[in-house]
Length: 312
Image 1 (cartoon, rainbow, N blue to C red):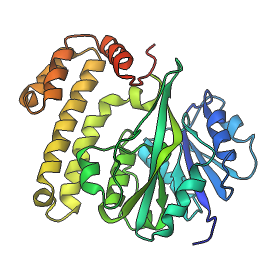
Image 2 (image 1 turned 180 degrees about the vertical axis):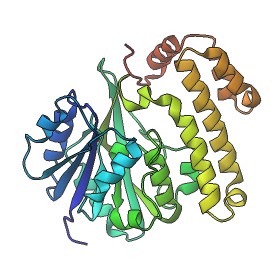
Image 3 (image 1 turned 30 degrees about the horizontal axis):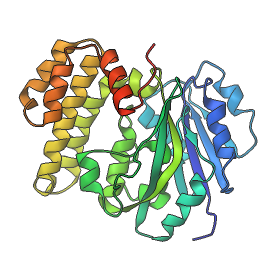
């Protein structure tokens, strides 16, 4: 492998002018120099295009004629990528300067298809917290653990292009919330994962992000993901029964959280009733839904140092 193979940095943006320049600048600040940016603009109506065009030829800008799902938009960006490796950075997240320099050497192991790192989450009030810290993180063949309790952050991930091309499909076109988790889990199904256990990226949490604006779609996409794996992987149900059970519980909890955040607490509890005694954390969450979600998030954030978006 060349000492500095080309890395294509995929940035998908939609009306991202508020944070986009700061995001792009963290790529230009990389100590690893052999990269290109592929910026796919999903029909923005703000200043996203003028910001993108203010950079040099290392940033290749593309704009869709109309807004589409994030999964398909990521596919269009990947189609334009020329790199041996692909890295991902959304319009409001940041990289630390040594990110690519520390991750790319881990691909010397030809069985590694994906490399991730620790990260720092932060919000607009200035609070920040390291995501993994000293926790033992998975490396090697991680699919069962990843499917049971997904833990990757897209801004930390770099993938080998050949691992992507080994799949029958890339990002799920109809997904807008879990398109990256589906793709990365399918890579992990056959490829090893490696990790740099120090923060190399920063995730910005705010209530206008896709994660919080479209949270109601997540559970539906989780269900579609399970159905897909049961279809494409032989004997999936018999190979991963415990992982499937955990995945289904997570899907129900995710749906309940969506209702709770949307001030539909009764519907949240209706979701949780069938699994309320499956886990003490689910039982506790059931009773927390009697309180407004904003209050609970604020209290938990102060007690545990957990970072949530600033609510508007």
